[in-house]
Image (cartoon, rainbow over all chains, first blue to last red; front, side, top):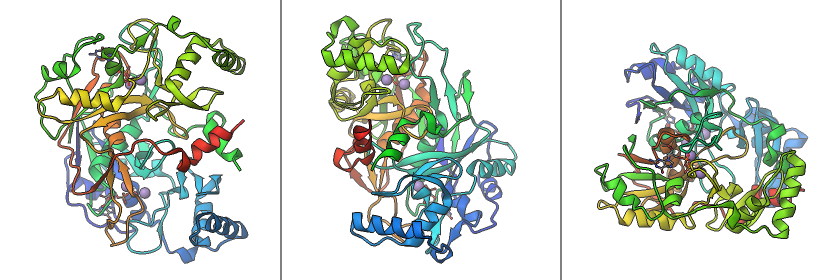
Amino acid sequence: MEVFAVPGLPEFEPGDDLAAAIEAQVDLRPDDVVCVASTVVSKVEDRRQPLARFEPTERARSIAERLASITGSTKDPRFAQAVLEESTSLVLDAPFLLAVTRFGHVGVNAGIDRSNTGGQGVLLLPEAPSESAARIRAGLSESPGVIVTDTSGRPFRTGQRGVAIGWDGVPVGRDWRGERDRDGTELAVTVENVADELAAAANLVSGEGAGGKPVVVVRDFEFGDHGTTEQLFRDRETDYVRQALEAWE
Amino acid sequence: MEVFAVPGLPEFEPGDDLAAAIEAQVDLRPDDVVCVASTVVSKVEDRRQPLARFEPTERARSIAERLASITGSTKDPRFAQAVLEESTSLVLDAPFLLAVTRFGHVGVNAGIDRSNTGGQGVLLLPEAPSESAARIRAGLSESPGVIVTDTSGRPFRTGQRGVAIGWDGVPVGRDWRGERDRDGTELAVTVENVADELAAAANLVSGEGAGGKPVVVVRDFEFGDHGTTEQLFRDRETDYVRQALEAWE
Ligand SMILES: Nc1nc2c(ncn2[C@@H]2O[C@H](COP(=O)(O)OP(=O)(O)O)[C@@H](O)[C@H]2O)c(=O)[nH]1
Ligand SMILES: Nc1nc2c(ncn2[C@@H]2O[C@H](COP(=O)(O)OP(=O)(O)O)[C@@H](O)[C@H]2O)c(=O)[nH]1
Ligand SMILES: [Mn+2]
Ligand SMILES: [Mn+2]
Ligand SMILES: [Mn+2]
Ligand SMILES: [Mn+2]
């Protein structure tokens, strides 16, 4: 399996055609997986917004005040408002904002970025990253799989890593249910989230800085003869961690 | 960057020399990262144990009974005992066992596996996976980086993915602190956990089944000119999710 960045991509602007920009730089194959950093998807989808666009409600003000009193540094109520507008609910409102985005992803600050935003304001995640992935894929002549990625943190483990937030033409999960291990015992691991693993692999090449490598191709990944799954985010009902956090004072 | 499985590895037995087995099959380079599935590390370290070896305490019995009453299927108190013996504490004791292993990893059932265990009993994680990584590395003439991996689940997102549980000769984190994005703004993402990203990439090639690919080489990964970090597991004090779970009824 090979993992390489698409070279020579420009700074992206609203309305730019990502698929065309990719295709101009690389000869894709039908079984490639093209991983696209959400930052550039957001840029072309005009998701960069000045903070002034967010009129804080009472709730946003009180969240920002509480966060400021806990963390000891000022918090912009307009930023809290942006998080609220991007979310269907908050899993935590302190000591940081952990939000469920409108498309189901649980992320700190609803994944709103202040880096690589083009100098000012905030960069919201794409509104519907799997639809973005489908649009990009439709513009690529060989119809490879497309994953929209982001970088995010998680409990228990330090640091951040690449994750998938949208996908098209590639399954989320490799389903091992019913298969047997080397001794004939049924497998304990049931579903492997290959979309997240592909996003993590891509992030090793993209990095987080000024490197200018927002698109990474994974070539010759062998999915193998397995079932597939198409759900990326857990249901609240079976997510005990989410329930515990929501109940936490 | 290239990611490939070491071919032709045998079924491993207690006492086998993993490094020698790897070296017999592949010409490694100093800047390779060799990812080794914990399953085979455990096998050579004789961590396969019959369940009868675990004498359930009162606590293990009551945990197993409570789990059985919640899930509706019987739970072996000896298995609960194995989890307790492998852990320093439980983050959750229901509706499943989420444990902090002796080396600091938070995992369901303390990462104890029933698959690929050689037919019976349980397979415990290596006692000190970073020491295992260092031993394997010491046996490899080119001294590549070594990561011991496992497959594990996580909150919020479906399925399981490869993670690092031990490492040697490769940093855990790529530290972006102080660096600037494409617009000169200081980066929001501070530390990228490349050990976990490498483990995830390796897992795409290893898979979870009978494929016999426990060792994966990542070649030509460019770490770049960045700071490094050496902590894989969060401190409890700054892990709010862990604290919320511990406080959950
Ligand atoms: N060529 C190009 N690269 C960009 C642009 N914006 C961001 N990048 C690069 O894309 C990669 C990922 O950026 P990051 O901000 O971490 O994106 P995120 O992980 O989706 O939040 C890095 O290599 C950035 O330098 C852009 O407009 N053009
Ligand atoms: N050659 C060989 N492969 C093994 C052995 N045990 C497990 N594997 C393979 O190692 C890979 C990872 O196995 P898995 O049980 O998922 O390990 P874990 O992720 O560390 O728990 C799979 O490709 C297995 O088929 C062994 O003793 N020899
Ligand atoms: Mn981002
Ligand atoms: Mn990133
Ligand atoms: Mn395992
Ligand atoms: Mn595995």
